[in-house]
Length: 206
Image (tube, rainbow, N blue to C red; front, side, top):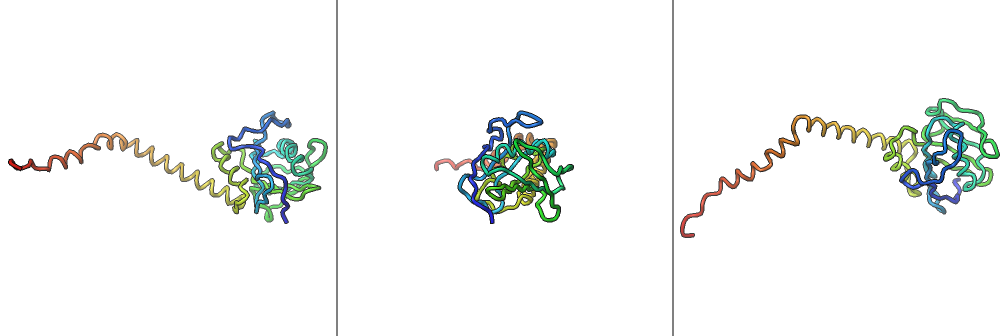
């Protein structure tokens, strides 16, 4: 059973809203959005957008923010599909987080976190290479307490949007390269002129 954790938005859709959290790789802000406080999301508690696929480097900053909100994070599980190296444990601020993995049982785009005092939390993991606009949209969707999509479902939808946008841009580029834009401008007045030319002069005396 999922518990109603005290949740706050650690980050807005501008992506770089949180005060910097010191970690081992940089002093850049943590990119995290959580469901609103007092809500009980069905599938996801929010989204995390790490800057790399290195759990040892990325987890300390994440737990530094989540420990005060959710209670001390003691265990994390991942799907190895997108994590090339999975350490057995990661030292974080004041304690150690143990890492486990499940290939078939866990969504490849989800991070599962366990706390001593509160229970379980599930975060969508947004790939580091994701564009800011797409990441912002995914974070908002994952942090929606009324959302019913799984982590993989959200990522699949984002990929479909990306493909559709690329196809649209390609079609526009081809159309412009063939003179479509200029041709439309140069002929835009012709139909109206043709209609006007077909209107006969009114008979005299009317």
